Image (cartoon, rainbow, N blue to C red; front, side):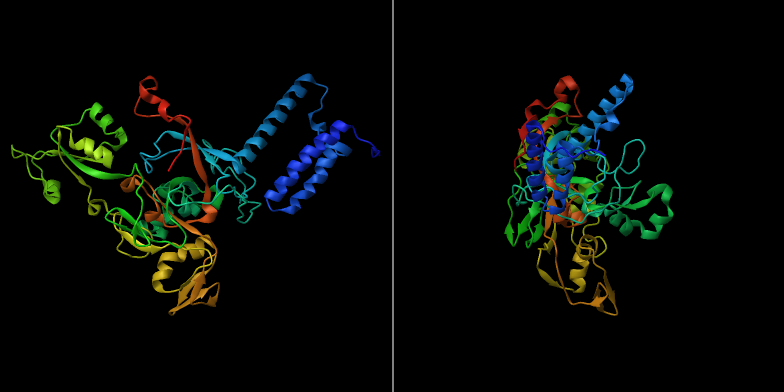
Length: 468
């Protein structure tokens, strides 16, 4: 039997004291005093050493010992990366143009978890640096068990209006694996639930994902809890007052040109190749020109029309190009789509939406047909209640109810590239438990339209702070 030592070297006491203080502070930060039981483990690691924690690394075979040392280093690195990624910051790449020109496709960001307070993970057993699926194998990168409820620890601040925020995609709770864009609920509105279930060859399996394993999105927080928000002719109004538009806000414009713009002219307008879209070829077919009120040219022919996302500054530059004959905002009716709530008709669209009230924690609403249409996803999907209507009576968790009190704060997120952003107008509110963090630094920016030695690296954006 191993004897209990009566005295410990000073060096061991110092190590234990340092790690013990750090671990205690961590447990207090996590607001979970049960974690303090881990101090007994630290006592044994640094002092008593009853458990041979390092025995698995010992071997008389030098090759085996060398391999085990590598395994030890890799395990330590994975745990360190896991904890940093979970509680401090994570890397994020801008995948789409919804925030252009504020953030560009190809920007790599450091996202601070400390800005709003890191969340305790819903799925603590997961592989670091992989959101939900291993590449190549397409298998899950996390375990469904254990599952922890939502809890957020103290951070440096709270979400503020006009903050750029990274969050888990709210409509990503249910996913058709082969068709993830548009989201599952839009697919139901378009095709029906049965059609999706029966056509697995096209839609794939339908799975559920916990909050912290839903895809990461990044948008600008336009609406705060308790706000009434409305979009009128592309202008956002908050509580009846016109909101501040982002400096780099873009809209789609239909640009009539006498001939194709050159690469240099597209670069002047800061339009990527992906966004250089032909709207109407011109020539003798003037169907779209008649719809838009664009007359034929001096030769009786119709000019080409391009669809380009532009900031107001770029619009002014475009007007000065000799090839540009006219320019106008793209009408909403041309590209109408489904908008939130996709299963309840509101008549709202991309450029004219609302008014809609954004739920606030502790606020109570009446359960009318209209409110149920707008907020049933909040009540059912985000706050985990049973909600149904039978014979004109609303039942909440099996009991008749006339009102509902919200448990979470909610936010309204929109892209700066207003006409090319699937945002809260498409999938609704972002609950507080979906908020991941705040982008603080662009550490790398790559332009996919250019070669590495011809502007492929945007040097001017590297190590630049992300501002509003």
